[in-house]
Amino acid sequence: MALAEDLIKLLLLVLPALAANGAPVVARRIYGRGTPLDMGRKWIDGRRVLGEGKTLEGFVAGVLTGLLVGIIEGVLFSDLYWFARAGLLAGIGAMIGDLIGSFIKRRLGMERGDPAPLLDQLDFYIGALVVLYIGGYRYNLVTAVVLAPLVVILHIMTNRLAYKASLKEVPH
Image (cartoon, rainbow, N blue to C red; front, side, top):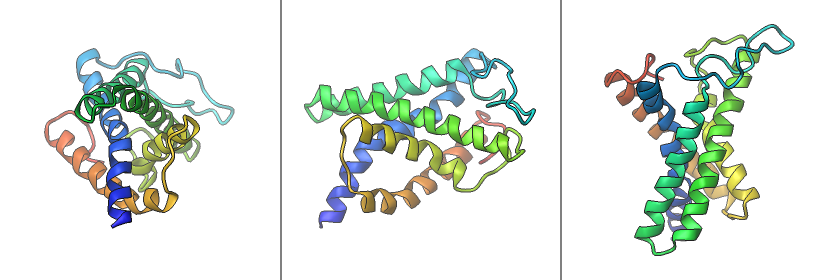
């Protein structure tokens, strides 16, 4: 019973990160290509630092979406400050995790849209967990590992839906 309760608590804590991870796709639909965060710069290996797909608009949309979901949770659970702060941190963490994932993919010589199983599905989740922990939100590491497969499944499902809705160019 304790694991189920811990899973629900952690899911509520990372729900803003899940929403934040999808926000840049919607932002791109609204703002077009956007402003690349790496400003077109290349790393010492000659490849782009992050690539064309990581934009200022997408990053901001992700952070604000995380905050918004946190505010909604705060209203629903009558603890606005705790959930709004968690949502903000989860959104920031999700976006940083996604940037790190993109950085790693570029170092491996992968292009935008190339599949990187597990990295694509978990970079934002791990980033959110790290930033939430740094921000003082505690959770059981075993629970986080147990929740990871659900996050992978949700990520795959939402990406396929976004692809079918023509929001994404690739289904992964």
